[in-house]
Length: 254
Image (cartoon, rainbow, N blue to C red; front, side, top):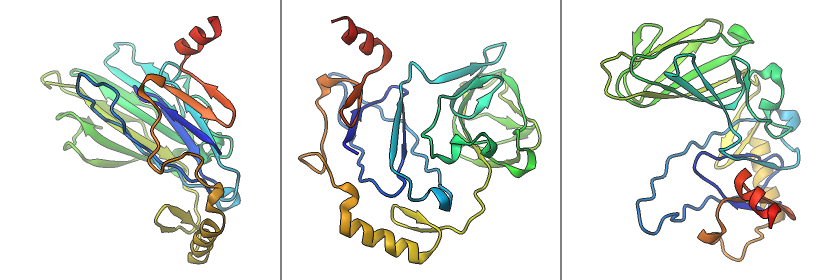
């Protein structure tokens, strides 16, 4: 694919591997004079059998463009990476992603509820046919539908019902959750290493395909290739290079 980039600070990189692509993630230091905290999610979204062999695709959604929702009291804030909440719709995913079809009701949200906050999360459009899971990732105090949740817990809920998220006023900090939601694909799953197919025979074929084609190979001079710090945030796809909105404006004006 000859893609690459540097991203962070809330950016969303979305890749569909399809029939195969070699990719790597490096974590170079951004700041030479202060700490470099790293905090991110890597989420794998499966493809149905009919899309397993589509061409690989790659989209960068810059943090400045990612859609966000806030409750009226601003005590609940949602970063909408996929899906829609109260009219706030996420940016488009790659065209062959399971999330690209609205009927699959895929949602990936980062939810932050401040002390004293209470928010009624709407039921999924697909009702009981949708899976919905919360991960309590940060904070110490959280109630889901009036049930106390321990930190670092996973909670599966009925997506056909509204869910109340609340944090007591006495809490010392906000609660942060990752919510994953979507219609089950409903097909057999076979997984080995980075490959997710529908049968063990397809897994073996994937390994043979990689040995034969290297999935197009690796375009960079080193296996651990890192772009220079001074290059800043950018996204390269083939011959086209994109930048975050502000940097894009600066380059167009020069």
